[in-house]
Length: 404
Length: 66
Image (cartoon, rainbow over all chains, first blue to last red):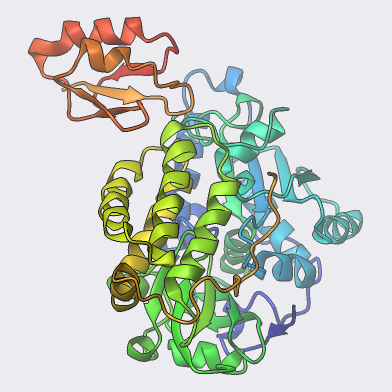
């Protein structure tokens, strides 16, 4: 997928710069600089990066530190979200920047080991290995290929996999920062987060940029890099603009939210503005849905994907997600008992939310709750037994591969 | 006040916790526990008994951070 090059400030660009291995900048004060920049994780959850780093420093300074061992940095480039391509694009175009970020983080945390995690089928593994061959880093750096699966990119799943287990989430606490790879304090960060960290270390404070994957009904789907706060209409224009009349956007990914296009063209694309609009930016996925598509049907396709991708380790996710999909199926089909299904579904959303070991069920709840709200008029017609013409149509977004 | 925490991966939905401690544990429609609130002093022993009785060792009492 091509990367559209845009106009963020020079210092904040991750993509359209020569990706060469230069001497690393100093790491003194790096955690404070990351804190001052307000850098948040770009893998989806948006957790403050400096807080995560400090948690590792805390764990590494406790009295039992000798037993725990030196910190480990895990660069997460697995990108389990099928609609997201920004991490793959970043790894293809700027592998050195990502490795720089991971190594700088390791140095700032007094760590001794960096693990770069990418999906098994991803071309990024070869690219990263080639980049590493031309570097001499002060810490051990290795590339590990992780099974391609939605929940495999949860940070506890990576830690479990690197410890020899399956790439499935574990119960936390303990968080990876306290007890991660080989029991060591572990800083798990998305590859874009690490690239931003490297840019901060190299260029000092600057306005942040974002990598976004823009897909669906746009003329040139792809990855764009924009200054944080760029209006949504501009982001869509960078992807060639709508290819047909667009009614809504799916934001954040398959466990994300729906946003009406008409009312939000001026919305600044950044985490806080999206949150204020009741949407999530997640890992920076924006998918345009044509106005004549059936929102509830498309939501059902995505929900079924999330059902298939569940690790099935926690009861509320294992049983709750299929139950939610069953309810939504009755609504989409406009069956006579659809109103009862609707009541059951809204009840189940409250029961399932927050009850898994990882956030997988929460994403499914967020997607469906958002669909019931944003497509309320359409849903009402379905409940009256009058589904729209596009009801039951195939998925317009990649349904993704599934382990089951 | 201490809290009951369910290890969602370890929990198999046996439901003993809800039998022993209905004041603080509901079951969802699939038989998995929903903790309804923190543990008051008067229920501490009952909560500890529920923790000990869990066949999956999935229930824990946690103290608030000092």
